[in-house]
Image (tube, rainbow, N blue to C red; front, side, top):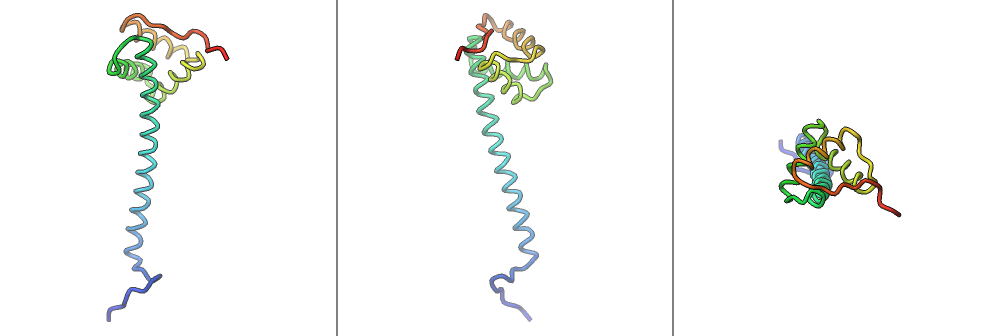
Length: 118
């Protein structure tokens, strides 16, 4: 005997995969939002390096990547610290040394020594 599908009487086997798929899609949306935010932060840091070191965006990317690898800090986190440094003049000492060494290898730079005046 076959039963007719009535509203509210969905097949439980069909609901579970659907719920799992919704969960997967929600996870993917969260990851994509994070990726977009991360990309913007990295682009801003690259822009700072381009302005400071007078290099191309590709070279700025390589500089950021190099500092991240040598500091053993995720690239996005290094980018965030560089943005804060540009705004407030604050950068952890070891990261500042790595950044200055990397910038020096690419030519003359203009480093922000003090936080901007209000």
